[in-house]
Length: 70
Image (cartoon, rainbow, N blue to C red; front, side):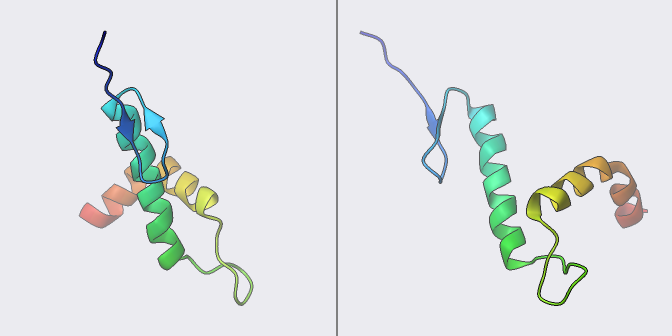
């Protein structure tokens, strides 16, 4: 018999490695945060899609760090 370890995220998914689970959980946490703090869209009552916003932040991470940190 062999002991098996897995990592479970808050949405119930199981991962073989802690790194995979941590990345997935970070995505869940970001989405949860964003839904409480959405970026307004072009029209009243709309917001930028969370996937689009995350992609924008990821693609512009270096520039955003420079603007924030100086």
